[in-house]
Amino acid sequence: MKKNMLAGLLLSINTLAFAQERLPQDDAAKYGASITPTDLKKHLVIIASDSLEGRDTGSPGQKKAAEYVSKYYKQYGLLPVATDADGSKSYLQKYKLYKRSWGDVYVKSDGKKYEFNKDFYLNGLLDVPEEVSTSLVTAGYGVQDGEYNDYAAMDVKDKSVVIFEGEPKMSGGKFLLSGNSEKSKWSGSVSWQVKAKLAQEKGAKYVFIITDKTGEDLDKEIRQRAVMARRFSAPTLKPVQESPSGIAAFVVSANVAAEMLGTSVQKLNKLKSEIDKTGKPVSRSFTGKATLKVGRVSETIDTENVAAFMEGSDKKDEVLVISAHLDHIGISANGEINNGADDDGSGTVSLLELAEAFGKAKAEGKGPRRSILFLNVTGEEKGLFGSEYYSENPLLPLKSTIADLNIDMIGRVDEAHKNDHKYVYLIGSDKLSSTLHEISEEANKKYVNFKLDYTFNDPKDPNRFYYRSDHYNFAKMGVPVIFYFTGVHEDYHRPGDDVEKILFDKQSEIVKLVFYTAWDLVNRDERIVVDSHKE
Image (cartoon, helix red, strand yellow):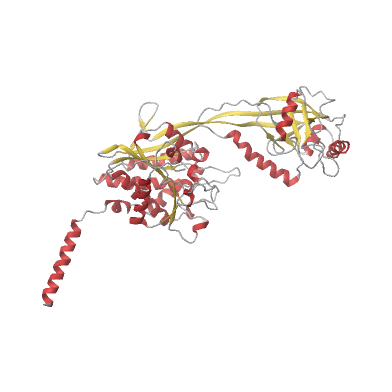
């Protein structure tokens, strides 16, 4: 009896083993296993090295990164689909950014040169391409309101006015014009516009405003204004057309104003006090001369997306895009290199690992049914320009694009997850396709078992991350998306975003999640449908 039972058990085991041998192998798991921390690191030590100098958009370092990933895409058997000017195929989708920026900007007076964003800053946009000389004359607060008029006894035509910040304030803290503690339009953050416009109407050429700030407060203000002035130097996808209105103002300290007017700070303050005390404009004025130049220069930035194509089999006319941005913010003003290992070196090398995994599958006869485009875009840090350019000039029809899986910063952890590294933020997965969301959830449950955190998927999220990476330029065209992200950390856009801080074991699991999701998308019988329109 026992002997028969043992024989039966052995037979059952042998039968089970034979049956298991005949079960279809999980191809996704097989090729997903080729994604390793070691390979991710191998690529990232190059992409995030000092030799690439932070990969600023259009820089030699960014172009080296483009060459690097193109080389590996070719090695993995992927095809170029962009077209060069000579008609040949290329991995590089070239495009231009256009930029107007500050050139020579300075003020000279009595043999001394005052530096832009050090000794003064500019409010508004001005274009004075050639050096000009101008006469200076003080005009009180530069105010005309009711019976009060700083210009009543003055002719400022073709001169430059030097005026005090704010408006007359009487003893007791009341403002002259309102008669109470309420400021008028002549005070506040945009009062310079009102004053500059009035001065222009009076015939003045330029306006200098003497700020009340001094010392560290003034230094801080100048630094902040220098950052704000960058909006006048931001690149665009279209050529920049500027029409400076002349409504602008040089903001200077009392010390600089006194030097240009050949007087002292004490005498300027006395003039101001006299207006406040009497409630009337003063008839006398300080005068001086200055030479100034405010140069605006045009610049074209040549950059390129990298696009590598893997053709599908029976459903090759449909395409999945997997994207990440190739560039970063370059070198800081103090000379420090921002290597961007996480942002977005982590996404860049993830695409290489994904391409290699799918390349191995195809080489062994297990290639995708649908086509895949691996897309490394540039210009993300400048304004999502590379993905915007692609969405407006797609290398493959957007109507045939089934989804975009976008990877941006998956190599670190944020403060909310410092004690739990097995997570990833998913953004956008349910906004256009419920099926895409279900596929993502199932892939995670079956293979990875990470916590899928949807905190930033909330339309009320104040960070608005859904709108801040390259997937959005696909989503706004109706293409379903998933944005993979592990959050902002203390080295975000700082020189400390280096390779040694990347958690490659964690990153490799997220890349596998992308792979398994992509595997389902490109091999399923039916294309996912757009059935949601969430914010």
